[in-house]
Length: 468
Image (cartoon, rainbow, N blue to C red; front, side, top):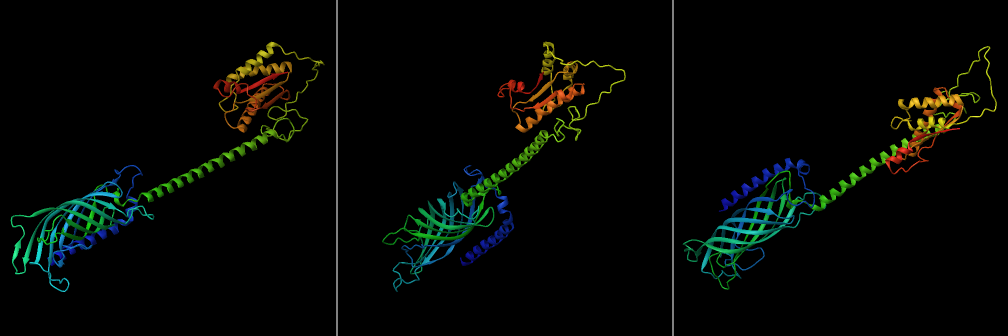
C-alpha cells in the first residue's frame, strides 16, 4: 500500500510539473487572451463547467476530533474525481466520486493501557462514494487584479458510500463483515480547500474533506455508545475548465476589478472626446478670427477712394480721382476738336413707373451661385437694362445686400457685401457711373420675413435696388 501511495504522489507531482510548464508559457498571454464579458450580461460569456482528478490520503478519523473505535489510524491511498457546474461567481454544484481504503489498529495505548476491544485491526474497502455538494468560493474578489490567482472554498453535500470492512480479532482471525456483498449508507461530505490558477484552463486543487457516515459500522465494529463513524480525505489534484480557452472561468472572475477597468476606460474615452472637442473649438475660433480680419479689411479704405481695401484692385488712388467699383480710375473723356456739348443746368431727373419696372425686374431675376457672390448669366439682360437706365438718366442707385440667418454673422455680412459689390461692379462695367452707385452689405440684420420657414429665408436672401 505504501508503494501505491508513493506511485500516486509521483504521478500527481509529474502532472503538477508539466502544468507549471504550461502555466509559465501561458503567463504572457493570460491577460491579453482571456475575454471577460460585459457586466450584468449573464453567465454565457464564461466557462462554467469543469472536471477534476485527485488523489491523497484516507484515514478513519477527523481533524476536528470525535470518537473512533480503534486507537491508531493508518493513512491509505484514496483517489477520485468530480464534475462541477458554476452557477454564479461564488456558488457551484459539484458531483464527486471517491474510492480507496481505510485502515486502523489498536496498537496505540489509551490512558496508558491497550484499548478494550475484541479486534486487533480493520481494513475497509470503499468501493465507491458518490455525493452532490454545493461549493462556495470565498476568495475570488480581489482589489488588485482582474483575475484572481487563488480561490479558497468550502463545500457541503450529501450522498451514498458503499463499503465492506474486514476485521482481525485479537486471536488473529480474519472476519469479513459482510461476506455476501457490501454495505451502502448515507454520508455527509464537508470540505474546504484552495484552488491555485496554473493557466487559463487549469487549476491546482488542494482540499480536505470530512465524511460523516450515518452508521457506526464503517470500521465493521459496533461499539457502545453507538456513535456515527467518520473519515477524512486530504487530497491534491488538478481541475480542468471546459469550453472556449479565451473565455474567463466564472469562479475566478473578479467583477469589482472589471467594473473599475470599465470606469477607467470610460474616463479615458471622455477625456479623449473632450480633447477632440477642444481642438475643434480652437479651429473654429481661428476661422472666426480670420473672418474678423477680413471684415476689418472690408471696413478700411486706406486711399479714401470710396472702395474698401478688400475690394480695391488699384490701391493708393488719389482722393480726387473718380474710380469704378473695383477702385480703379475711370477713363477720361477726351473732347474732340470742334465738338460742341450742350450743358443744361438745374436738370431734374424724373423717375417713372417704367424705370421702377426695369429695376423690379432686375431684382426678381437676380441670381447668384449658391453661397457665392458670382452672378448667374441669366441675370445679365436685366442688369443691362438697369445700367442703360443709369447711364441715360444719370440717376443714382443704392444696392443693399441681405442674407438669411443660416451661418455665422461675420460670414453673412461678408457675403451680403460681396453680392452688392458684385452688382455694382457689373453695372459699372456696363458704363454706369460707379460714383453714383452705393453698395452696402447688411448681412442678416434686416430680414424682410421670418427666418423660421424656408420661404421666409428665401425672401431674406436678396439685393435691394433703390433709385433716386
